[in-house]
Length: 404
Image (cartoon, rainbow, N blue to C red; front, side, top):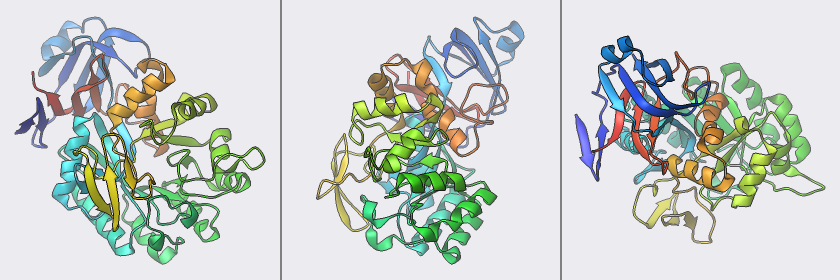
């Protein structure tokens, strides 16, 4: 069964796994440079790959063959930070609305994502966890890896577009039920707030990543948090204490502390291209993670909607509150990758990991996804020379394909 429109096909989840042989492809994300090669997926996993033509037994045994026409085949994109798209806020979304977002993301090359909350009431957060869990495992498109709690345990001084009335310290009686759900993969908090610090040990015990965001921490407080288990920076540059040569702040620590990976919203609005290049110069390529921070206006015509009672105006480029404050983005992962190649001046072969493997590593899944390696998930995206998505497969299942 498919849904068709505007020159592409979306495959619903009735499409079963099959063995697929990709030929005539430029492989990006393998252990070596392969300009013209093949890749075989079997049972949802990468079974093998190589240069030139595949061996005859592989070629004759594949159930489906796809001629990639010298396009780039790379790991599917992984978005650790998205609040929604196509008119849907993931906070409070129904199961069908979550499926709509999943299908849209697949059309933009996303194979997996974290459904991200904002500073909302305990009841809204719990309801979102329940809705997300109900969809996990039966997604039509991009797979939900879990939930990213971006707040409410942040600093109201750096609230950004989040509602100050819902920002609060982390109390065990509230937080433990969230963690007990088993689907929280990452928590963004402000480490300078003393009542939040117990959460580091609890998250470490459960394998949950702790990130800093919406924070006014000093450099020294960031150092202390890193010692407690802080490992990631939410939307670097935005909603955080900036750099000063006498007090480097959150930003200075993000750039200086080698163990910290850094998200970047690369829409060329949230951070100037020069700031992006500074981040790339300060961090290794394995520590830079593309995210969208997308909101419900993503993938929609320009217009106006309301976010937690606030009026948000969105265009093709950005989304802002009435006072001009950025309210998330309308970015998609494919555009973020194109922007990265443009801004950095580096070829796809040198920055591909920022859209896939690095994100998997942040949440401890890089051994099973985010790279072209035998035995890892066959989550793949095919990109034409303009880095536009022409095919997306997840666990060896085609979920998006441009109509020929």
